Amino acid sequence: MNGVRPLVLVTLDGWGLRAEREANAIALARTPIFDRLAGKGLETSLVASGEAVGLAPGQPGNAQAAYQTLGAGAPVEHPLLKVNRALEASGDDAITNHPVIRQLIARARPLGGAVHLIGMASPAGVAGHQNHLAVLAALLSHEGMQVWVHAVMDGQDTPPQEGIVHLAELTEDIAGAENAELGSVMGRRYGFDARCDPARVETALKALIETDAPRAEYLSVHLDNAYNKNLSDDDVPPAISQNYRGIRSDDAVLLVNLRPDHAHSLISALTGPDARPHGPVLSGVYSLLRLSGPLDTEVEWMYEPARASTTLAEALSGAGLSQLALCETAAEANLWTFARAGRDTLLFGETVLVADTPPPAKLLRRGDLAAAEITNETVNAIKKASHDLIVANYPNAALLGRTGNLKATVAAVEAVDKQLGKIAAQIEKRGGTLLICGTYGKAERMTDPGSGEQSRVTTEARVPFVLASPSGGLTLRPGTLADIAPTLLSLLDVEIPAAMRGHPLIVPENEEAADPASAAGRIGV
Image (cartoon, rainbow, N blue to C red; front, side):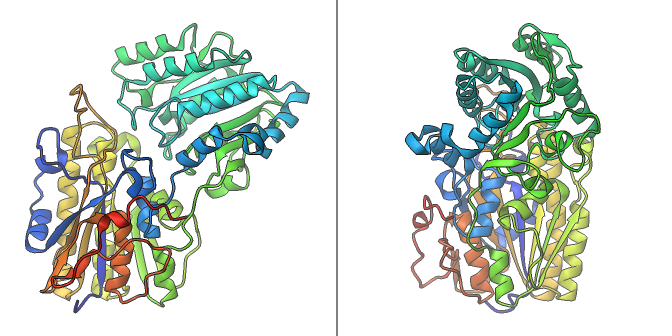
């Protein structure tokens, strides 16, 4: 292709493909720019869920899987699969023999300390899994430890008021563990999500440490009362069980997580640089999955997330090319923790710009988020011809889609479309190349297909890939998210690393395209 530089990739979170218009924020939105670019250019669709992005077969896509795959040019195994294998192992590999479990017991048991398991009471397996809580509770109970299970309700990767079913399942699963009890219940917005209101985190701490929260004989009744107030699972305020006595000195805390960027606000309040000055002196703080950022050195972990051996950013830097990545704070982990495989230092020729996302309380009124700032910086970089590759991320459709508000999500999609127009105008003026890619499905299905109720969950939908201004004699083949990095490197005439198992999506019309299925289902670590 001639005039490929500057090469601009725009990634659209939550922008899935679905033919039906009902409850489809993408189809209901007015998107004249996207429609024009897709109509005049080349368009195909990409698999963004299941084995193609390192997940279990049939599992909906999500941000972690999407950006790991985009960065690696290959599917990277999701932690859920690794942890599930560990729970099923026997003999020397059994989880009971894990060094961290043995250390936790050795530290807390002689002091008479209890173990507090904090994790998602959810079967989704995105931020956590209720089965992991149940297995660890039974294991530690069998070792003679008093175990308190703190159930964090989902409501984002599951239907918004289905948590009462999941809590009942978890309660039944731990019923046979003699020393395990349900200690508390709270929504994930009270400290478990990546971005949480500090006031809510403080409320959670008062409940967990000081037992300053409503007590309930049956925590399921507390959930039901919250539902009657039209609250979703993620917004359920903390409540504690009748017998719960708080986190005390000599107790241990084990975060049962599946994302390295979650629960930081809550765990930081218990340990680390922002620890509460008068909190209990714990015998240990642990996590199921290694945490990112400052907590990496504060919290001892059981399992390391699978990481790509090389990434798109490294391949570009190694070739001496310059690159600019733009995102906003709500999606920052997608860049650093996932797309860059946790490598948090800038590479040669690399620039990263992060705009501030409006506070969660303002999301419904600010569906444009920080889109204008991202677009302005992108346009400036195109004008200056300062980078070989520019990657601009717009998380609007995903973030608003997860609120369940169809009207607000439609507005968010339309806001992004306006930004695409500004970028496309500059690309057409400067003679560069614009690519547009969805990352995972969400906004295209805002209601549950079975019940017709509001849905916040991500989907198995394919996502669009658009080459906005192609040269003649080219076609696009269907593929997966693993094909994005090889496509970019091919356009920039950079050798594709052997670890990248994807294939370029752009092929000459007279050349047979590689089978896209060959990239799916092969896990690259």
